[in-house]
Image 1 (spheres, rainbow, N blue to C red):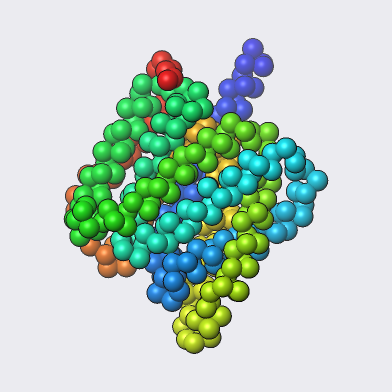
Image 2: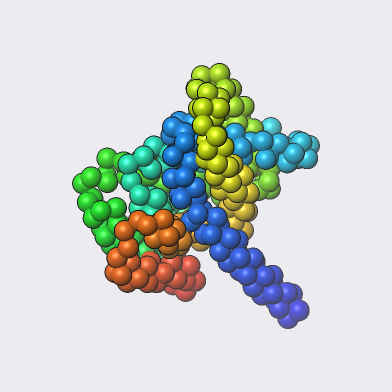
Length: 308
């Protein structure tokens, strides 16, 4: 009886911690899109991506030093994949996307991550899901499409040429989530994140200073330092700190729960867009409600599990 009660208490504690991490990530990543928009006012999308990775790398160096004795060399290949497909390539894709779409729309498109996570997990990682969770994925996706249809000047054809970069990034995120859950379950989140950025950070810093005009761009305009500040926040909080929390969430709460953070990000991203005088439509509220219903169902526990 005591053991059963202790197990319930531990599960409840994990659930509370999971929701706290989820909420923190929603606020951080929901704000990332407006920070990218601000940074693009001073630097190219290539420079923004390199700077984002570089700031996260520098922030995480102390964690590399403290974790060096914990690293399992056999896991370095998977950690390299996490760095490249989960952090490196998406940083460039999102920066490129926001040269042509609003920050709020980028946040909305990011919500495709749970759908891809489910599909990739079931097709290649033997992931099992419940019917109610699958239904939640598609309901939330419907809300996302609805929100997308009334944002970004209401032109899906126009947005797709830039939105495709976000869609590709979300597919890479989905692969990354499943890799972390399947192959790095026994590696702590700090070690995964810090070594992932060590692998991609050194090349990013090298390319930034030797092969771009970052330094001339920074010195040419005093206001560029303001843009650098926005990107520093993006790299330190939006990449470094947030990914430590996210990798911990994946390990503790499962792939669908972790991926569902991206369904809530548009809520924050849209309101940042409104604050930045992007177009607001009252129908946003309806579609946000649909998204929230989908998130609830994604994380509903009852029902029969299925797998492909």
